[in-house]
Length: 299
Ligand code: GUN
Image (tube, rainbow, N blue to C red; front, side, top):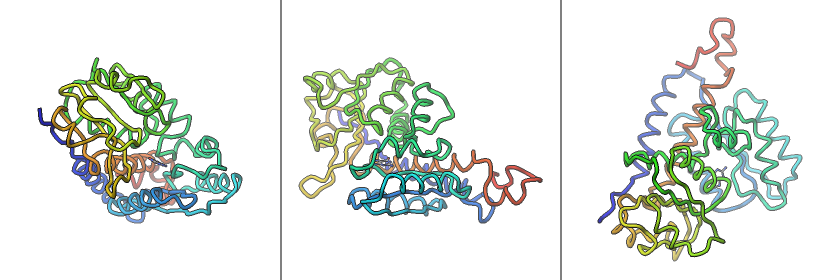
């Protein structure tokens, strides 16, 4: 079998085109704004943030990047988040991870207002997602994977989905989303024993472990759907967790790296940002016209 390629770049562009059309219809001077808090000098984080900023601009979302020194104290960072929470012009807030080691990630993330938590990382939104509640924000990467999976039009009910990785930002929410779609879900991680024996049972395999080309065709069931969240620099190239050239001969669908899950992550983040804007009780122009219409700029 030769796998069909799940073209994340094209799917993400289609989603961004829709966002751009919706944003273009908003009243002039009335734009969603995303604040990105970037602490320290992590090279990969700087690249990710630049990509988010560029894509945001292309769909008409204002993206304010707040770069902070590595040594910033916890209280100083918390007060910046608090200010953004109270700023009615800011609709989405993300804190780029990882944070420098002296900062307590969970404490910092928990300080973001759930209404502006467009990464869906706060315990509140995580909880809503776990309950399959429609109101919360769902983390962009797992949401992007799910959207790509849905393009296959395969019925997910009862399928065995195996997730490699148990991080709070990918593995755990991914597993929950798949469970919400009635998959039978196995979560594996670096301590799992005989991982290939588990992955060979997968109808759907989502990998987010950051081990370049770890997954070869021997790890795969014939006809499996393989979604690769890994992005690692390896021998001068950007590589996923999956040995693409080997696995593509055995899978039914497969995502490439780059051009698979990555672009979908950004598109889903921007989609969440527009959603946060539309849900906000006020924005600049509606505030001026509060007595006439609460939703003057939402059409
Ligand atoms: N670090 C790696 N992926 C992400 C992401 O989706 N959002 C944030 N804030 N940080 C990340």
